[in-house]
Length: 449
Image 1: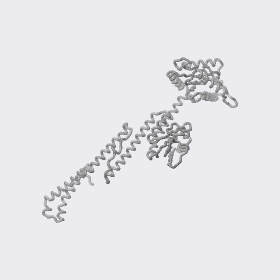
Image 2: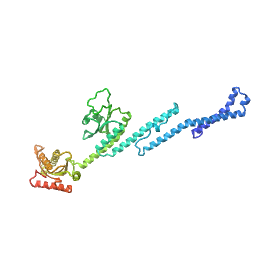
Image 3: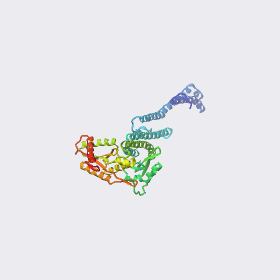
């Protein structure tokens, strides 16, 4: 249709009114053809009445078009405006899209082009709402992951959030550390210790591809790794720049929807980036805290941990002991056998000392051939017992060098709080140093607390 103005309904009114006038002009001739009196049919007043009738019919059609079609178009425009507001919410702080069928859909009550348009609009709204919600979920998930720098905290919170978003009841995250796959966190899974050797998990790590296991109802399960009977299990690799960092295992009562499977790729990208950053952070922290030769705490970090434990002991009125360890005549070992062998001796002694400590006790390399042990909750007698076990373990151990067996001994001095009444941890260390000095003066290879 030829456009006359920039308004559709104005064009429609012009065309309808013009058509009404045209019908009014033609109608007298039609009546003449049907046998009407020529005098009446060709009279000017009959022409006028016919044209007025045509104009009236055109006006009524315009009103009906406004009422029927215009109201639908206005409703469509209103809902489009609402959708625009929902889109703007993405840039705000909204955490979800409030676009339910009740407040976003257009009623579909006709089986024509208007009804088809309304139905297509509703489908578009549903698809758009899902896309927006997914984008907002990914944004929220990514923001959550960036708040955690330590790997363990990241994996725990990432797994909980991911399970909530995909709607499953059991899951696990395994990460690769030093060439081995380790279970970091699990929820609702049994036999989690065997996950790292599961063939499906290892296959995902090697191929960098997802494994989806569908379990029919009539199939008997043996050794299932969940505390319930799942319908589907997903093994999703965590891949950063084509390098496998670990896997996510998800198990559900019901089959995962295709949307969930598609969205896992998007969530996996965020998780992979965050996990890579966390693992890098852990490595940096480890380098800052660990002595690279003996793999125990270095002096700076170790003394910081001693301060924390001493403050805790004072507040809680619990015991705390310190052992100062010195390798007897270690300079001779370096002079005779070289520093390479000396380094081997230091690593061996560090391993021997660690084997005599409990979980939570702290081993520190102060520098050179000096070590410090912090014993939590240890009295004087406890410190003496541990010190003697360490001394005996080292003295009975030989380090092979060629055909020779190298044997070293330790001098150990200790002090225990609150049996030694001190105000600062530095004074406790000084008391242990004095005990060590007495051991050296009395012949070495002894323990004094």
